[in-house]
Image (cartoon, rainbow, N blue to C red; front, side, top):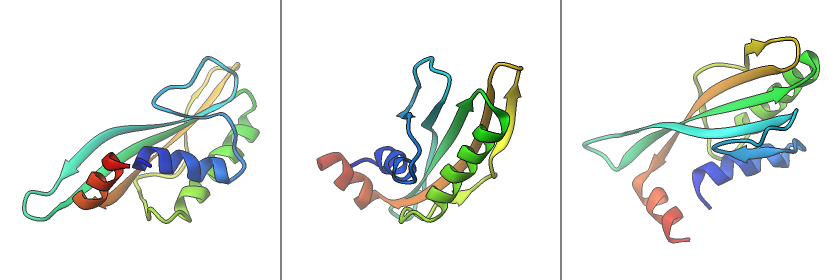
Length: 118
């Protein structure tokens, strides 16, 4: 299972549905987990993998609550993420609401290699 798949599964395990990787279909409510940057260390076999989680919905308060549930699910996950921000409102146009948060996961190159072999 890849790191991206593990993050998605952690959010699903919190009872949140419609969780997608990379992109979500055009449905009213969805959560998307997407990688956006990788920073390998030169002198040690370690890398920092960065992800953004976007939570889309129609109701402000329900979407905000789902965003925080997703945040707490990852906060308590065994991947031990380091958060760059808590859920932040980035769009509210009257028809949809979008919250996002970003996180980093430190991972060894061995773990990354093992994920590729599974």
